[in-house]
Structures are given as structure tokens and as C-alpha cells.
Image 1 (cartoon, protein in one colour):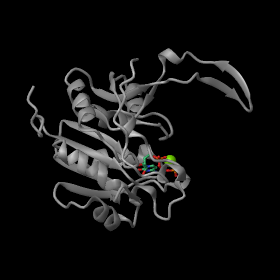
Image 2 (cartoon, helix red, strand yellow; image 1 turned 135 degrees about the vertical axis):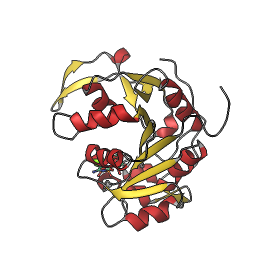
Image 3 (cartoon, rainbow, N blue to C red; image 1 turned 120 degrees about the horizontal axis):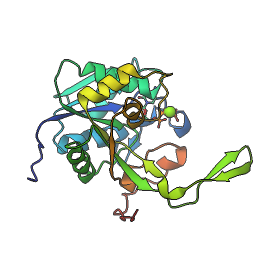
Length: 234
Ligand code: CTP
Ligand code: MG
């Protein structure tokens, strides 16, 4: 395995950035808010390009394409398209936009996760050599319970649970087909769920705490650089 910046074959990425960021309390949708000196969105675009991504589709809110282009800071190998009402619809639009370009592999990433370690991308792409999909996961360290209103209803088996992050990596033809044949409302939490529903196998690789999704206003308060990751055994 070489350490080349351009793994073979080339891969594309869809960065979903069409949400409103309601919970973040920012003036702009959170993907365009400043984060450690540049827009949130630019961080993941830079990381994807550094990892050798050949083409990036940014799925943006209608009427905010120029803002997305400015935030991305690049013009080559970039398309910007309209998103949908749900994340799943935004991803589906991104997949359709790649239909004529012919990449065999695609990463699907939340713009709201600015810090994308290159080693996670490498782990995901390498897992795709044997599976149709690959996701970064972290162990659950707290106990997990099922809630019934304000009461605890039941405990849950933490050992079998994982926290799931993005980017997620897929063989393009399989994730496109899975989205096209999704049977229910388009409200899946992520694309691994969509692939699984279509019968595809999803490998799990080590995630990284730095991939945290900026969600709430307090996530934007401390913008110091992340600590080095601590690898937690599963
Ligand atoms: N997203 C999208 N299209 C949607 C909804 C979400 O592209 N219709 C994207 C967001 O821009 C984000 C990612 O999906 O990068 C994860 O969604 P989330 O963290 O929930 O972001 P928002 O929906 O923007 O935030 P909120 O739920 O607080 O409004
Ligand atoms: Mg949301």
C-alpha cells in the first residue's frame, strides 16, 4: 500500500450542507459559520481534497449556492446543487448529480463535521475493497437506557452499540441503487441505514472524536484546536 495522496481508483464526495442549523443558534446556517478561522464547510472540503478526492458535490440550500462556493474556496472539481427537505433527500440529490460522472466510490459527509482526519478516509476506502459500505464508529462509554417520558423504561446492551460518524464510504452503484429503492419516508439518519435496508454489507472502522458534529450553540463557543485523539478499545 503506498502513501500516495491519490488512492486508486479515484473517488468522489458528497458534502451535505443543505440544513438550516436550527439548533446551533448561528446567524448563518452553521455550515457557513466561522470555525477556527474559516467557514465550517471549508475545513472538510480542504481535508477531502488533501486526501485525493477527485470531485466534490456540495448539496446546498436553494439560493445559497454562491455562499457555498465562497465557503468552499475552490472552483475545480466542484459542483453545487440544491438539497431537499431531509438529509436523506439531500444525499439522494447528490448521488443523482454524480450519475453521469462515473466514479466507482463515493464518500458521503456532513458539512457540520469540519475536522476530518485523513487516516479515517484511508481506513474507509480500504474497507471498501471487501464491503459495499464502510462507516467510522466509536464505542459507547456511558450506560444507555430506553426512556419512557421522564422514566427509565429499560436498559440497553451498550457492548453491541456504536456511535456512527461521517464521512461514510460506499461503492457508488450500490448506494445509488439503495437510495432509489428506499421504501419508506426519506428520513433515514444516515446512508449506512439506507444501504443496509437494501441488503448491503457495511464495515465498521475506527472513528475519531475529532469528527464531532457541530450541533448546538455551545459547540461554537470553544474553537481551540482539538486534542490529539485517544484510541479507545472496543
Ligand atoms: N442536511 C442537509 N439537508 C437537509 C438537512 C440536513 O443537507 N435537509 C445536512 C446538514 O447541513 C448537516 C448534515 O445534514 O451538514 C447533518 O444534519 P444536522 O446536523 O441535523 O444539521 P441541520 O439539519 O442543519 O441542523 P438542525 O437539525 O439543528 O436544524
Ligand atoms: Mg437536522
